[in-house]
Image (cartoon, rainbow, N blue to C red; front, top):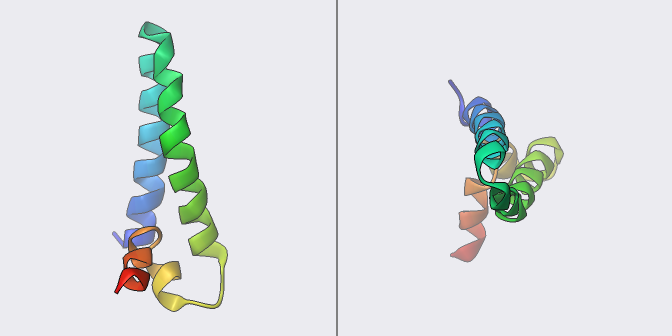
Length: 67
């Protein structure tokens, strides 16, 4: 399983688990305020064509720019 596939799988599972948690605790929807920007950033990284590192390693590849 590649990092891209793992990112997609984790994004789907995390979103579904937040929705299920929100059925029991309505404040759980606030977790989407943290998760959705990260998922959006990862999707942007996967579809962009300029940086191969970002395309292969969504979100994690951004650590490269810190050093």
